[in-house]
Image 1 (cartoon, rainbow, N blue to C red):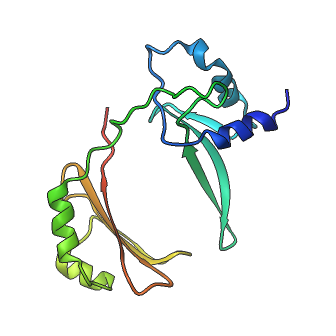
Image 2: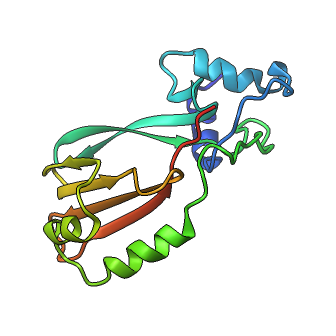
Image 3: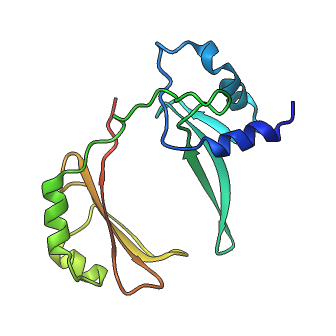
Length: 166
């Protein structure tokens, strides 16, 4: 069998993700699991998150970055794979509105620190950003990430749901 064909099918069928559920017969995804077992295959299964994904490398400013994209459909049958939409908490909308209002028009990470206080984590410059501040303790279910891109005069603010622990 031509190994390129399943990979092309995988690329076509990429999307959100799936959970390997005990109620789903293993034989149903035998071909997908066979791809995961092949060390040369880009298809991987993460036992921690219960997601199948396609892994690939991307070059950014001469540096190789490991990336992955979760699968939504079985690439061999086209059938939707069982999805687990409960991997992350929903974003705390009150916190989202509060952060959006407070950071409206703010252009520096120093100003963010004055407004939101000391971050739980802070990272310096890399190939894409001048810095990043992460606030995990503002909410039990939501994290706030603020980044300052190298080539921009604005901040990027992400308010995301935290991963659920099982």
